[in-house]
Length: 343
Length: 248
Image (cartoon, rainbow over all chains, first blue to last red; front, side, top):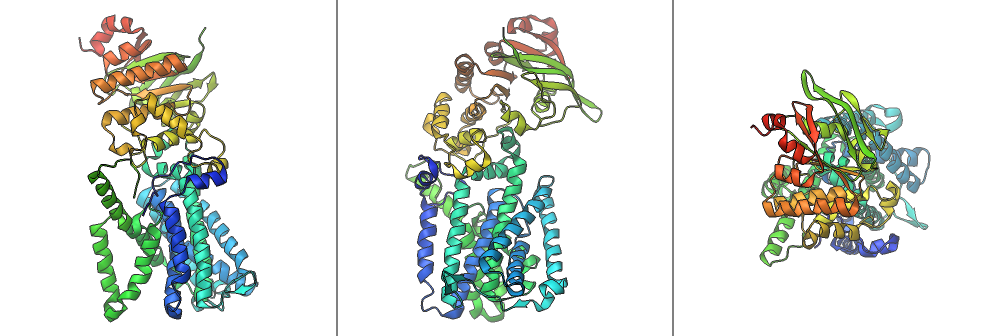
């Protein structure tokens, strides 16, 4: 495994194609190999198993966005669940009430969340750390109240049902396996876009923002622009995840987008490994699949899940990938290699 | 005739009732290495922060190449060709030496959009490696900055200030905490940047040998004001300086 999230890899060739070749690394190979495996994995798994796998990927998209905002750019946000809700409701409302196709809904969900993320990013120019978290928490609560109370638009607690799944080149994705494969492709595209972004000078600027904004400003890095962009792009990923979540469950109500969802997404970033590009997949796997695997414990599964997460964070506060990173560094030190690259 | 790069006129900074910088005026000419010395708390770093936009001055003006840049943001100052180092180490420990150097120069390459779709190193790998060589860090380009010794991080910090090809570099205590061998290296590198590339510096420093052997002119500050200005020899010989700063 080769994870270099906090360490953009310089490209030797110029141009888009040359840049791509120059940037080949373990993360890219893992993403592509993972997509191939996930394409075939649900065969013979049944509807529910396939649904859980798809939900994992959809959740991972939202976590990827939060990982950019929080893990890479260092901006505390408790609004990713709300952005997922906004994306889901835009897709559901436009699709069911106006008959707009899913692709347009998907694009509009991302755009709307990008724009809202820009606006929400402005407080980040003034307040930091937990003060910023409280601003985003207020936004999250406000969104949930709108989703619950504006019944004429959102259906309130009755929600919106019969959300159609997209078609691809005339092929329907109504079946669990077909939709899963559709989500695999969309997840791969979004993950690759983020992979490119993190390895671009923008990614390095985001890291500088997290590590030392005063020094970053003295190097000519436009703190204002990069702060707003980190918020906006991260939020757009929340919107994209919501646009996939709505057709996955085919019925949405405000409950999955309450404040607790934002906390869970934050937990996934931290547990997977904040700032690591593959961390969101591990964090989302922990939060989506682990409760399913623990169902044999009956009514105790949430308690067991909580204990497992607590133990994990005590043993590896930098997340699963942080632990692997430390192990890799120790191994390299033991065998004499010290080129500074990350595992 | 050399022309002024930086003109500071009547610069003042008050923190409530405390006057940290009190009407400081000086000029830095092209190719000059100006030293600023003074006891701890005399306002040297605050003066730097006011010039570079980290703090808004209470009064006075700052001109760069004749243009009024008073109160400009640190980003804007950097884009106009002014680089700096800080009193405390300010490298990015999670990035490698090469990435630190690329980061220091990338915002001067193209537009934001072209940087997003262009090469990941903004075309700066060769320049970063060359700068690392100049500052004797060529063998460490792939090492994480956080794993370097203090002296090596100081060299990296200084090297970063030169990555964007600046018109003027303000160095805040570059010699602080650096061992003698490393210090000689740093001085030699800075002098080379001055002689070979015509770089203009302002250096705040407590190490008298370093300042007196590197700088062409020295300003002495006491209690937020300029006590005197002159060549290193004149400063060494001034009884007021000896009394106020050197404690004689």
